[in-house]
Length: 337
Image (tube, rainbow, N blue to C red; front, side, top):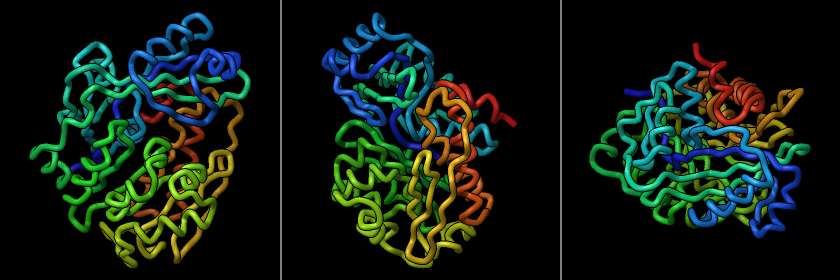
């Protein structure tokens, strides 16, 4: 049995630096700091052509939210695997080679790879993202994949761009046994589809990783009102449900929402407990892409070791801070143990 199995988009991340994102918007690309949009490969090519002239390519990396989390967990000496689709092309080979230590036998290589263009302003250091999805990203699950889902302690989801992604991940979630943990980071792309579209996955979710902005996008409600709208759906509101007998769920009395607040730190929400922890101070931010994914890895790493809620949060903010020190996944080299 493996510790963590991931499912989500697999991307080739191209990180560009520009003087001002306003110049990118003036050129016709609706990109704003802190936000992610999706589009076709033709638009991605036009955007890269613009950035080749008006920006600087800073890094090329394997990407995808769940993939980033799983790669970090592999570096932390967990047994990991991934379900997804990469292109049968040079980019796809690069993506798979970037997933050091992760069992990628369930990744299908077909079609054209997904591309995520990440644009960072020189001064503000916040990023905007444009994703062109894999042509055939939802060509699963099959019997081998559903069997592998039953052979993991934790299944971790992030978004797929194609519309069928939610229903496919719901099928995998429904295959889980009660003692298995499902963690879910919907991101902005899934949050924008609304809470009703995500209900099938949320009903099996034990840990929901989400930002304050995503709560508002998903529910139309800000703050505690939004969290109170989401929480009753989690794990079908199984109060006292404690998969794997972990201390985290003993502390919280069942499923939890982990609200990531960037520079404001992070908080756990459940009816039985509320725990908040500040962010780590960072002297210099190089790239904040994937900091939330790093947070997830730090949190899940200690969760599976039986740590209590506050220690899981602390591990998350420490790893998020570390990830800000380099472009893409370059910071992972400091985790190999």
